Length: 75
Image (cartoon, rainbow, N blue to C red; front, side, top):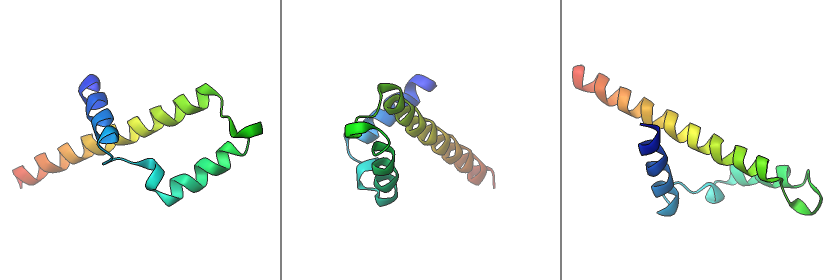
């Protein structure tokens, strides 16, 4: 299941349906985070953390959507 969710996540990003750069709040926090490092170069582990956080949020939302759809079918 995790592999399928990862594929869906990547597809959503590649097709620009999940675009963090267009979210003003995300951009504000991202810019603040970049300012913490000289030259704005975030260490690779921080970039990885952001990527994993985005995936986990996507996976949680997807699973919640599936549960809601099942609940609606039962009701």
